[in-house]
Length: 244
Image (cartoon, rainbow, N blue to C red; front, side, top):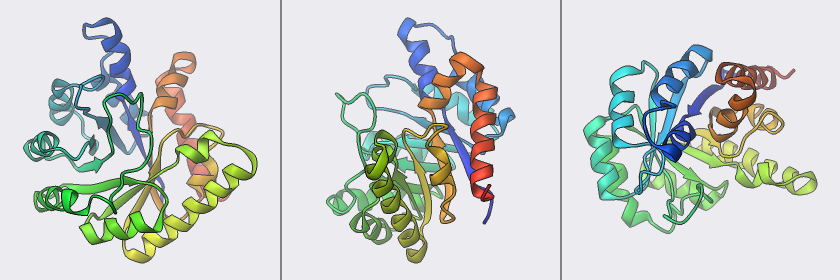
């Protein structure tokens, strides 16, 4: 199995900054620290209401970080225009509702084929690696393939939120979806809610190439520091991938 990549989501560094206003703490500084701690990429979600990451943050991330930037975005003309202007390494299309606290589930790609098709096409044509954030559902994987998106990111929220048999069931769904993605020729990523105690079974899935983790790492950094938080996650991922 190849090395499992870690994308660190820095949104909630910006959440803390925005709670008081001003410039501290700086998510761009967090991105630099993440790179030094072993992250393979940086993820940032530019929401319609700019509740955490701002347009200026995206400008500065594109100008200063050496790691690939994964821009999470809603499927709207405004966000497509921003992505086409900046040309980040990747754009992950996620569902977005203004009233939600965080992303609540996967994108209904199967139900929005005609809405998504021109947007995915424009991003792909611009050389941006398009990912669709979806549930571990065969219909959604088939839709991603039909849309021409080269990458899917499986929503791990339900797996993380439950324990016992329900968690086992959710893990089996993710394992099956990752295998289907590989069969369809799609690169498979996963993320949402992953923590130290839940990451290993997901990291052990050979067909998954990348995990995107943010909220837990930023929260844990309050107690141990961002460097230690990311290094511990990297260690757990590597051990799980090696079968230890």
